Image (cartoon, rainbow, N blue to C red):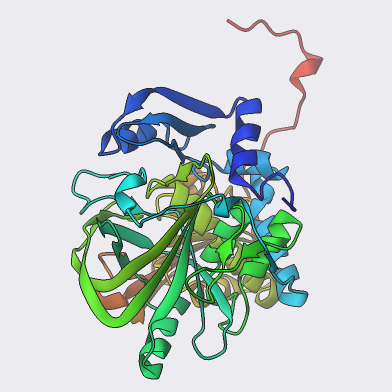
Length: 455
């Protein structure tokens, strides 16, 4: 299969195993709550997890690919601190010179086509205690614009209702919501495919903010930049929508506009349960898979904070560095769920630019609720250092900006119906700089120059 070592999940798992970055759970594990419970014990650690024996199912389950930036950096040959700039660079290159996906005659995902559609044969876990049922939460959705035919990639959550039916939550403002509306206007159903077990490039393409990928662009080309080769697709057998050639599983589906069913609850990225509400129904028409597939799932915590947060950071960093002189780095904090709190580092050039960076960040990534701007002598990935800047440099009378009744992220309970308030903190030194705001520092020394006895 064309592409580098991160273009195929089977190769990724082998690589992680070779590097000592794969935890193998060899005991049988129940996919109902126990699997996620075990995975949660390793969440955020330096290794991913492969569940080799899933009770009642033939095939294993894999999780944890995105819960450590260090792990992602190792796979991509980058230091974890370099990842936002690397991701931003890949998206920028795609924007300038997009590489079209390549449709091939066949691929590993077509090794087996199930004789009948039965979602109950797939090892789809139930994650959290109050979840409404088993959920697909790591599949890359491919759909086509009913008017233009342009492909779109996205990641949605799908509740398994029965053997051939799913109910899906679609975030407001996503292209899939637009496609469903266009299909309704044309009096047509909307075909789509759900591709489970794919390389990070496809996951990143699906998570790229709409602000960086306009509706007229084929987002699958973003994955080509990460995988260093055109993404390979195979033609659908039920519709004109393609599937990822080297996915572990591919489901061919369709939505009937206006048809809804109850979806939820689901433990979301916020750490709260998303409410059970009527949402679109998805009918599964065919299931394809590899001969020996591995089902991929994610926990709605650090994996989402890192994967989506990394894409958000990349978009905000690229926009801010074009618009605001002196911006050096951006970080979406884990405390902010990877969606809601952006910390910006700036080497100020003149008064007022910190607030300019704050407003530009809100515009670049609408789900944000909070933006904190600090000087470039602050480690934006260290919560204690950011708090130090807030405690010693923020002037509450002039440095706090609030914006009321503005669009945000519907999964955040403080934004009911996607409407709420946002806040920005200017925790930078006053301009021009004076020495009373200079940080105390110590001389850089090498311990190799000294004989030291450690206990």
